Image (cartoon, rainbow, N blue to C red; front, side, top):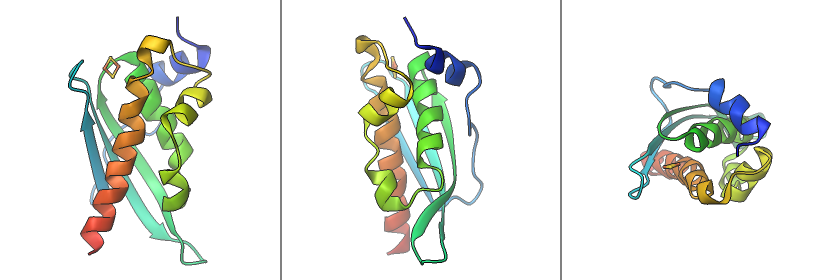
Length: 127
Ligand code: FES
């Protein structure tokens, strides 16, 4: 049912945990299954003054797909500019995981949405 990549990220998730004093936090829940995902980002300016996600971590209470997509989105978003990170879609996450079972595609929404929320939170804090 699950690809090798999903199982890899589920059994050994990357970037799991909390960032103390994060630049932004995003939390999204799925009302149907009750699963929840929280993403922490640290944003720094690079030499070209672009805002870059220098660190990212997640905490997820959820199914195997939710854990695997959390792990994968942190890999995809790390060291990206905010604009690049905002372009990551749930399909990008699912593709990087070599596919998700169709009934599990909704789980990848959590990852893309919570990353977006974290970036939004960062931008609001700066105002
Ligand atoms: Fe809830 Fe996967 S079943 S996120």
